Image (tube, rainbow, N blue to C red):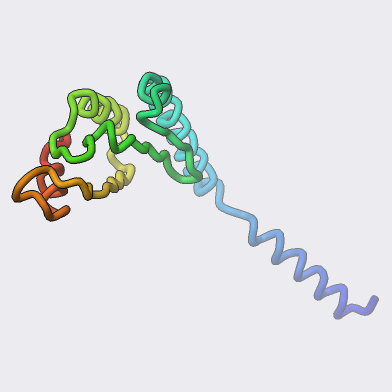
Length: 137
């Protein structure tokens, strides 16, 4: 093997080794975040076991997040704008678990209903606008 080939192989190996390296601080911060997410996930599963068991809620541990999906029929039965008391209690329990982690981004997604609520409520946006304020804060 000639010198230029050896140097090229050594440089390639060095570059590959360096691309996988992170600072100790970055690694520890990542580990801390991962531990916190695992704790949130475990706590949510324990405290929401009734809802999960009844298939009213699904809790999923993602790479950098915890996803909580609530059955739409639990929140707002089709053709209704008011939230059930059970749904309010479930959301309050989830909020109490997530509140200590306010640095965590919370994304709320929802969809409107195509079933008319009644006269004057034919447009789906009216249903959405009426549902929003009923969610516990």
